[in-house]
Length: 195
Image 1 (cartoon, rainbow, N blue to C red):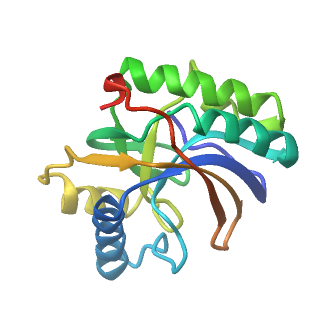
Image 2 (tube, rainbow, N blue to C red):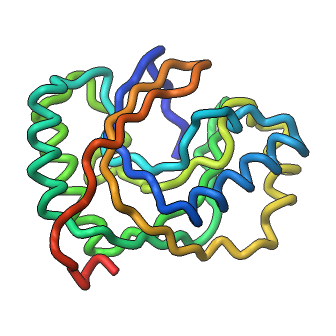
């Protein structure tokens, strides 16, 4: 899959991770920054994965709907199982998130809710196209340095478990750190299908 061309400013509905997973991802970002000068490491940038991306949302309606949804969803774990690359002129290196039935069902619920309040939705996040992932490098990753970056990571075990407790709405302007508003804590009852 090629990396998408993006508008100058995009909004998204995402989830962040517990402190342990946050630190693990940030450690990889720092290493890639220190060894290869990759600019994904920025103060304020938060490890996350995206459920839906659009040019803009009706935030009042979306906030109300996400409040309802988050009250019904219990905190859950996601599992990663290795590295992936979105190819293209500007490749993106990422951790692949396992798409199990529970995660796909949750994506269906969140995507449908977001779509009702979105304008300019990204086709890469539809149910048919969605590749859940955690970005490791994108801003300065090029076809020329991608092989060396991959060699530095390829022998590592990226079978991680990451705990998810929030749904957030974010806005990202190219070249700047995105703003993230994690106001929706998952408060539903425990669901063993999400563990």
